[in-house]
Amino acid sequence: MKALPLLVLLGGAALAQPAAPTLNTGDTAWMLVSAALVLLMTPGLAFFYGGLTRAPSVLNTMMMSVASIGLVGVLWTLAGYTLAFGEGGNALVGGLGHLGLEGVQGQLWGTIPTSVFAAFQAMFAIIALALISGAVVERMRFGAFLCFGGLWSLLIYAPLAHWVWSSDGWLFRAGALDFAGGTVIHIAAGVSALVAAAVLGPRLGYPRAAHVPHNVPFVLLGAGLLWFGWMGFNAGSALAANQTAALALLTTLVAPAAALLTWLAWESRGGGKPTAVGAATGLVVGLVAITPACAFVSPWAALVIGVLGATASFWTVQAKRRLGADDALDVFACHGVAGIVGALLTGALAWTTGSGKPVGEQLLTQLLSVAVSVLYTGAGSFLLLKLVGLWMPLRVTVRQEVGGMDLSAHSEQGYREPETGLGAPVFVGGD
Image (cartoon, rainbow, N blue to C red; front, side, top):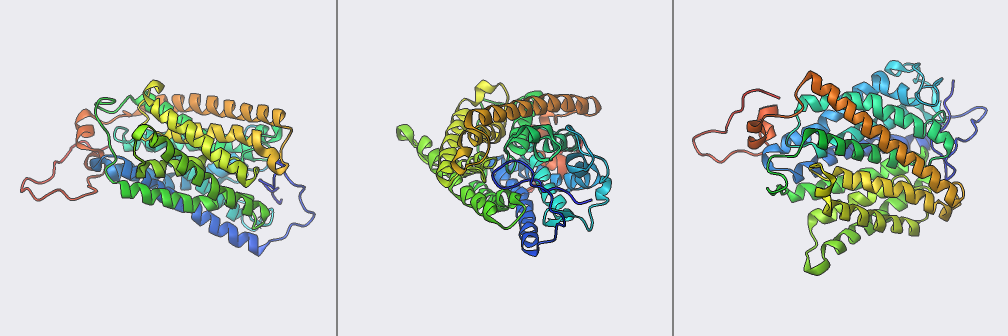
């Protein structure tokens, strides 16, 4: 049985299945490249997050992203894909006919092989989990993160992806617009990150002690890799090499550019200085904000989304202490808030390309999808963290946190200690 196309040009509804769908080699080639671009985003995120943490925890921070590739890659193959996109499902979850990715070989998803579509979507599921890690760095046990992450990927991410992106999903049928993951990935990861930070509690010394980035060049490198890979993330979601992909690529250029300048402008107010970390953060926020709208709005509207997304996220970061949780790397402010702004502005500005419902009706639909995502991912993450906490401690010991996560969790160091003759400290107790 041939699968229906998932995301299509500007309408947010599935196209009619052709009588005899045929493989398009150009579309397939573009999707192979797009999948590789999206995969690169997770190592890029590792550099971005790694540079923002303390030096004794850089490896542990990066390993949370790297391990997400292995963990989610396996789980997506075993069950994640079929829960999200399996045929014969219902409004809440996909059918179980593709457990272990059985039955996708030799089939088409629109004009591309279903196996390519499954691989492309796996990359989305991988980075969604990796994003959450930024909120809990320097204090969450590595094993606990992996246990939570596995459950989160199967029980929260996959069903939400089905609701929004599958032609059977109830939010899809309601007309919710999310071209490339503003709701499914960024709101879900941002809200889950905030909940995880609250459950774990703050880092030692927070907010009195300064937690400054140890390697700003890493941050810039990571942001650059994210922007590069995001071209496949957004433009690849057209599932074809066509005008939709071209519009998505263009808006993925202009919105982050506007967001970067906006962030620097806010930093520079009142005699402040524009920072490299601010530039990197601003462009990432712009990427997040444009993701749900990238093929639904015109380039000038993308500029507006970049400016408003950056403004909302910047001021959320300034009000961080009021959130009541130590979201270490501002995942909620940069992904959750920008994702919410982008999702709502998708409804407000989709008219600029003639897509979607009337503005008021589409805004209400977008608001519904945002509210559902926030509630489901927030409550679900809280329950999963409590469940994992019954099995193992979520947090490292005080001694391990003070000394840094790298030695205690991985018996490695990101940087060699100066030759003192005393050797590097050794922490016993593993994870």
